[in-house]
Length: 172
Image 1 (cartoon, rainbow, N blue to C red):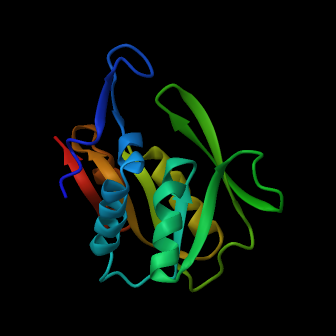
Image 2 (image 1 turned 90 degrees about the horizontal axis):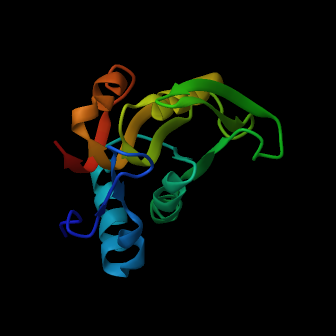
């Protein structure tokens, strides 16, 4: 199923000049949502991994169902202050400021192989910070997986030196 007609463009969000790719219509359509999850699973079927790591919050939307389907662990990459136990933490720059991601210290261990999952790849900064969290736990990044990739922003180039990058829908 081609998801492009379902993914909606929102001009000037979150600020003027940005064309936002809104994936919420995909989840509102059960057939499209299933096609998205199945398509993402198919992209990584030949990758050796033990866990999926969903980046807050839209990465959870895909990593959760995939972890159930693939019988693997799921790790949460959350914004600062959202996890209750001890955490690994990474701060990184955004286009409009700084952010901090956290992951429970006991979520991964040495030998674990992790695919980092998010809804959209833009510049790659958040995914790169997530990879750093995986490495802090002694685990290995097996890949990056995105529903949408905005190729013109070059995020894939930033990530390819770390692990393979997979995207279901690409926009030039």
